[in-house]
Image (cartoon, rainbow, N blue to C red):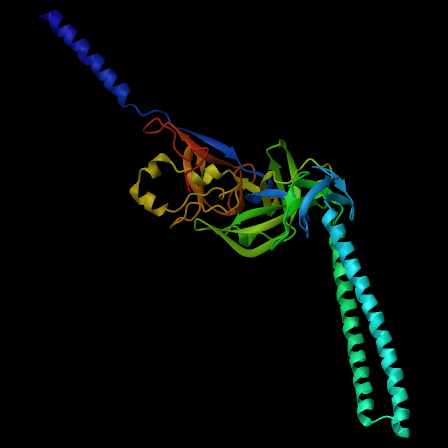
Length: 411
């Protein structure tokens, strides 16, 4: 019996100790970050495609079969240089036929002029004969009618000469068009024909070549969301990367903001044109560019980590009243790399962060400015450079971390 009592007592003691340690609250600690001074750059991100500033599509004004090609892809051409030739046989024949018609019309004109000269001599002679009473009035009238007919024939012959001369010029022009020439200095970036292919110039001129006038100067047509377009301005600096050179950043400048909206699946965007220097010819037309436009920049300002504005002590996070007061979107960066100012925790308390005093979190009201993914400008606050703000709680009632995650809450 005594042994049974001892065993029971030991069991009760062990259970009590286990309950004590089980209910013991883990020690609470906080992770902090020092407030520093530095530069904050707010950007708007978008994507677009590279293209030459001036691209010319070369077509043909006459139909026929391609007989010769003088250039290929990436060929450098000069203005007026022959780049292709259409079989000129039909055009040569047309020129000869038009020349023959023109010569025939000139001969008819000369014949009409001779007839006119004869009619003029006859009417002059008949004037004297009529005055002397040698011929009748009817004979004179016939001579006058012949004169007028000869004058009309001359005018008709002159019209025929002009008409056939125009047809000759048209035939010669078509013959000249059979040789396709470059309208600008540039580089052939596209060729849509081969030797032996037939091209037809009917209602719409077919595109045979595409020439980039100057590949050392390129542009990007960037699609910017309607929520960000108000912050884009001319001459803003931009940086971008392309998949071909993922480790290299290229520079550009905003030169045009187009007002025409582009609506795709109820999403409204606007085209912003960014000019790019391509002196080293690394960039090629059609490359996809991930562009970041610098819309705001501040140097030597106090910087808060975005997670400091998202942090909230566990005891406050569990309090429904505090939740209602701290309602509103947490602070952080904008949709792109901090493109929008931080919203912070709003409500009755406005924006606030927490600092440690006697190992307890104490709220400090703050006012923020521009932001990006890594930092938010601290505009007004009792905090100063070197102060530490809490970004994470470790331990507490649940032994789990509290506060903002490194990625932040979803927007």
